[in-house]
Length: 79
Image (cartoon, rainbow, N blue to C red; front, side, top):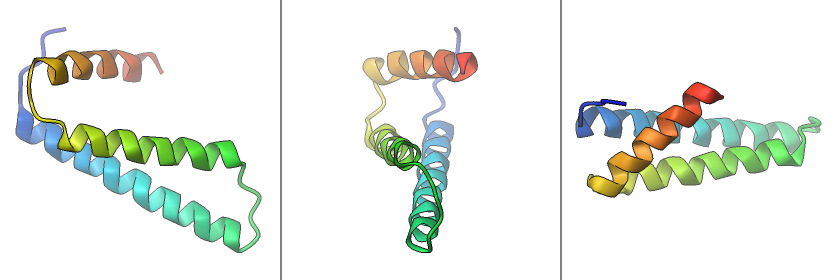
């Protein structure tokens, strides 16, 4: 996969993912506190997504980052 190395756009995308999953996790915790029946694995999944998005956001741009980025995009297309 030939992808340009646009670090600025990667950072914006990763920040968006971090913001999205953080707010989603917060909203789910509020719903659970109010008695909603949200499965624990679903909340754990969103916590994991927050951690992954944070790691991707602070990961310096290099050969390893771009190799992982390609794998992550293949996985996202697969899912």
